[in-house]
Image 1: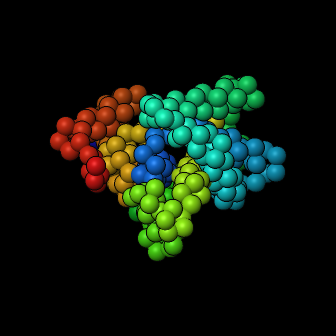
Image 2: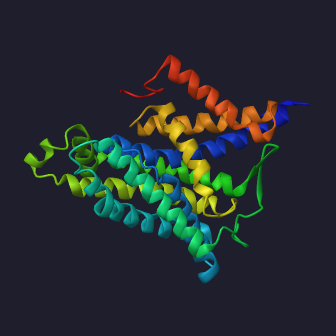
Image 3: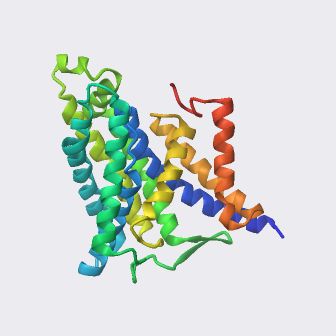
Length: 293
């Protein structure tokens, strides 16, 4: 039987997960908004971040909260290298450029997942000891898992930092100018490949930050990114393709809808509510809640 306490508890937990969903989706939305490319390896970037966090915890006894900036920096470099080594060449296709880009990122996802299975085996792993693992915080009678609470706070701070970076810095203005017209920016001395590489790095760093936090409370295995990537795609479409703000708000909405669905349906069907809301938005507002397409 549902009581007010259970409803508030569930929605609070959904809000915390929604903020993490938003952080994952923001990286995807940033890349799409910049280059009109959907990164189908986004889930594998998350998986890589979780394995990196696990490795640092096991090899150096480094808590995920401390390793999160290191993992985000490593993912930034990885994302920039992926653009320079893969995406830049895919964009040079003369025909069917959209399909070439799709298969380039989809192929990258398969390679990354296969390498993870080969190097780490399909076994489930978890970080044995962490500062926040298994702890809860009591807020006015509402018990919140400490890792998710920390992840939610980090998500909010990361989004604020991203907002300021985009709107208050020269790099943000260069990013916006390149998004509007990647050909014309060369006339004012902006190297679009450099901006694209930094954009891919920034998008990867955001998902790396999310992966480092999620490694505290979620099992780590080669396919871990698949389910979160699917939610991220839905979240980006729900918020509006290319809208960073929309992706973050939609992530919160997805977390709340998921929690509400789990209260009335079996836990295995909690995604039904997410896709139901998504379909409603597709029919009523195809460009998404905050999209401009």
